[in-house]
Amino acid sequence: MAIAVRLQYNRSVSNPSRRRRDPEQTRTAIIAALLDAVHDGDFAPTTKALAQRAGVSERSIFVHFPTRDDLLIAATDLQSERVEALIVTADTSAPLGERVDAVVRQSAAIFALQRNPRVLGLLESSSVPAVDERMRLTDQRIRDGLGHMFTPELTRDGELDEELLDLVDATASWPLRHHLVERRSASEDDSSKALRRALLLLLS
Amino acid sequence: MAIAVRLQYNRSVSNPSRRRRDPEQTRTAIIAALLDAVHDGDFAPTTKALAQRAGVSERSIFVHFPTRDDLLIAATDLQSERVEALIVTADTSAPLGERVDAVVRQSAAIFALQRNPRVLGLLESSSVPAVDERMRLTDQRIRDGLGHMFTPELTRDGELDEELLDLVDATASWPLRHHLVERRSASEDDSSKALRRALLLLLS
Image (cartoon, rainbow over all chains, first blue to last red; front, side, top):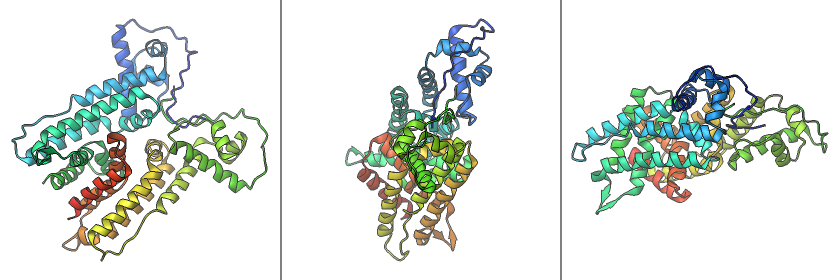
């Protein structure tokens, strides 16, 4: 019995490769297929399903990723790059409302990518250190971005209010929006409206 | 390859039962063993490990829980009851600070139970409707309790401010504390202090 997230690497697969493709393309297609499956709520895709999604042979999955952790780590890397590409910056001299709007848009964009993958990532991070580290790095970059954007509001007596930044970070990031969307079935717009309100209350 | 949470029910187990016990006790011991394992961060216990933890035979797991979903649903039921037993009430005429303190203590107690199990629950709820329903019921009861305790602050022009209640709920519940503890390595006390501050900013 494995309760969670145990990729069963069935190495008995013997299909010949169906096509020749650049190895790097094949590798990327497999990673993207896993992320797509998880995005769609399939937390336990079979290698067969992944191969179909990626348009590669099942065997090539094992060639590129000798262990399940190799695939999970590669998927975490790609996902992290995608998330980090969505981090916005804003002039700290812009009005608070404008900066909050930018952050709320960022949070919506990142959540659209992360809604399901992050649940799997949180679970995997407890057993795969490289997944944990990569996720933490992205989380840190998001927090750093927020710290920069809200420097005027977060600085008291010349010192950054780390506690308030933590609250802003949790509010602007995955946790709060996930709760609103998953538990209150809030739409993207309603979640954004609620998060905007919370951020203004925290930062005013 | 199964990426997530596929209990592998290996029915070839043939050990005889090691002892006679009340069937209800055996059942409860198995459920509690699964919750303990997940609590300890083992999201993928084997039936062998579960049987050892529970002090029962591996075979008895399959007798009591013919499918993995049966066990997961039973574990969700027990966990939900434990969480609901921690929901506090407070006189709405008490000062806001006292009520916030009570809620922060509740959030710490529930988080001590839910830190890891909720991650697995969120993941399982996407594929096991009974897990999803039971978790939602508990979440609803927590939210209802908060709505009651903060009625004076949440009522505007005779109407409950549902959006603000959602924000208070997410702040007082698992999401924010999980982020602070997992991502910022905050202690229980520091998390409680931060959450208290956020709740006062939201409700004042």
